[in-house]
Length: 561
Image 1: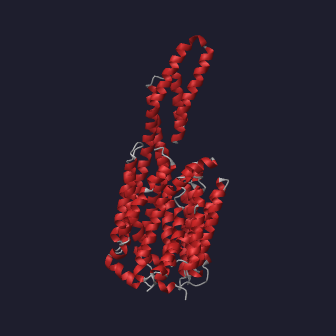
Image 2: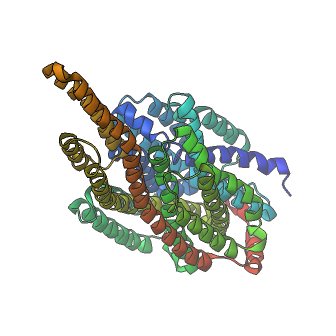
Image 3: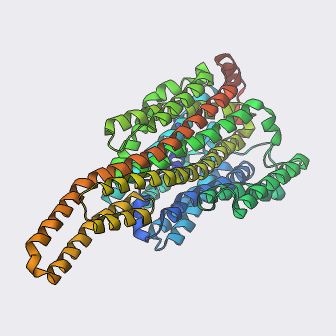
């Protein structure tokens, strides 16, 4: 039997790279408003800081896994770590939003060489009786790293320049690559030939790129756009060609027969639902907290991190999935996540922080019960030599789910926001109509409400501008009629007082309607997670079958002789 040290050091080494790569999927979220101001760009464009990472990550995953199985997992992992560190430094040094997006793409490519390789890289060092625990550990770490991202990003961007969210990867990456070099053996998939499946690699990459890119474009151009439709059609064609080539290939990069196992297929569908749910909570809530609740980035990060605390608290229980089976863990996790997401829809703009924290902890408990059991089930439902490709598919499904989530959620939010803004502006106009303002001021306010766009910040600015314009107008009137100074000052004092009294009510109307727009989107996310619960049930492994799977595992077969 291996000593504890012989498998603990490889776990620590791989865990550092795994944590770093997944952390970067969410660490930038809370800092996006600061980046937007730094580059003087728009929310639509700054979202590509996240999207470019996810596109590159999703497109390269399967190819990276295949190369790792063929030419060495340790080798690919080390290359990925070094590329990630270099790209992180370049992200921090970027002087334009275009360069930042480019280097984030390279980061995503490097992450695809790191994340799916970790589990098969470590399993060759792991005693058979510890396989379930180790697999569970990486599943839990995936949830914790994703949830901790906003907190770490918030702390860094609040106390340092936002560029340090990238520079922090340098010491982590260098430590990881050093430990991998000294403590991890090289390993392969012994059934994989050295022949590169070029047609499979090209067709699946085109299919994944077209799908993820097309979905991400939906938020800007809509579902019926020729660009989006062409991307979706191209993705389907690419996938069909991939299946055709793989079926004929003696050494396919992705054995399509894996999906004949309905449990494995259901597990990947459950992951798609999880990706949508994660974006619903961690992507949208970052903007909701900083814009609607008007709290700082570090506060938003700390609030969002409450879910990771719950995830860590549930970790000891989730780790029991390798003994008790994954069935009810996964189902319970999806149901809890759904309940938490649904409750987020009832949070108002003046809600207590502790209520928000409580709801997010429910989401965190759900996450902790999902990642570990689902990752265990997917790894154990394929032959042991295919652990690498199964791990890669785990990440591909999650990334595609995240891309689908961003596409659907942003479009839904924009649509709901337009409707709610119309209603809010009508209410604000009615309130102005019955106010004590002069007719001239009433018309000016109503015109500004009608012309203002949806962003809360713009509407706030326009209201504040009224006070400045009112002061300017008062000065002009006083200059033109100095003999009526007392009367003029009295009239303008009444209007100024009315603005000060009315402003909080107008602001509350705007915030309440923005909250209603988010409410509809959170409810959609809750429904998706309930659908995920169904597929988690179909994917689940009961306790009896779990014991059978673990007895059959022999990951030593993949180790280099």
